[in-house]
Length: 348
Image (cartoon, rainbow, N blue to C red; front, side):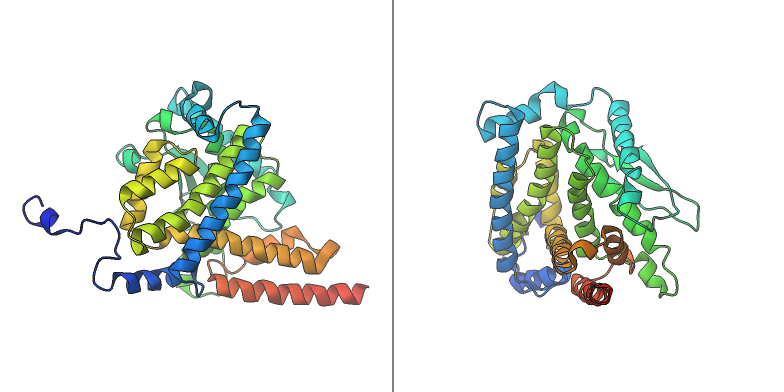
């Protein structure tokens, strides 16, 4: 490792300097977005989203009553003890309460819910130091294992409470648990479809679930709303950073600085995230692209159907085929819109 591998390795962290690296990344961009997008298009979309979200963050900063700059507000959020749990149990209890609170709101937004329950657990200690803030571990109808919303309790000073509502909605309900367990209840589909996970769809749904929390009243304070925006900004930054690292020759230091300057994520989490992107070219761009597509399709349905739009029916439709390509989702939703528009005409 020391004498042979490291001296022979590339000085840049991304794959663009490797032979065929740029072509490989162009392919991975299409693979992970499931759309005919180029790295440059993803990069520009990311820059646009970062700019838009930054304006929303500044607005929430004003609402919070904080007297200081954006940079000072980030320092305040990262260091003030009021935003951090004192014990692992406190963090777990808070996550559990938020999950239960959202469960009570699900019948307002969905007709069909999974049979499988889920629990809230700590990220295993052996992997916690380099793990994300939370993750979903899927359940199994075969073995009787429940779904599990994993919460990382390592380094509590890097696990702010103000991002916990968004994290809970993404990983538990109505995010990954609801979507994944419904896909396992599909009937009359090839076996591989029951376990298929297309990142642009699954992670796009996770981000859309965070957005749905606004309507559901899950963000009770300006800080929690800023936490939601921090998560949204985090995913928008991914569009810029992933392309930067693997296509535009960015250094690791550039990527860390960009994310640290634009989000309220802890510096520990910023570093673990950047290392993750370096090791998994293209995957990070799937999240925000998926969310944008789902929200675009909902806006289109609301515009065409007006008062006839049924939020429960829309959500049931989006989740009814399991994990699918965004291009396939477009066809399904537009076909549904045309059908519903025809029924609306008949009624009128």
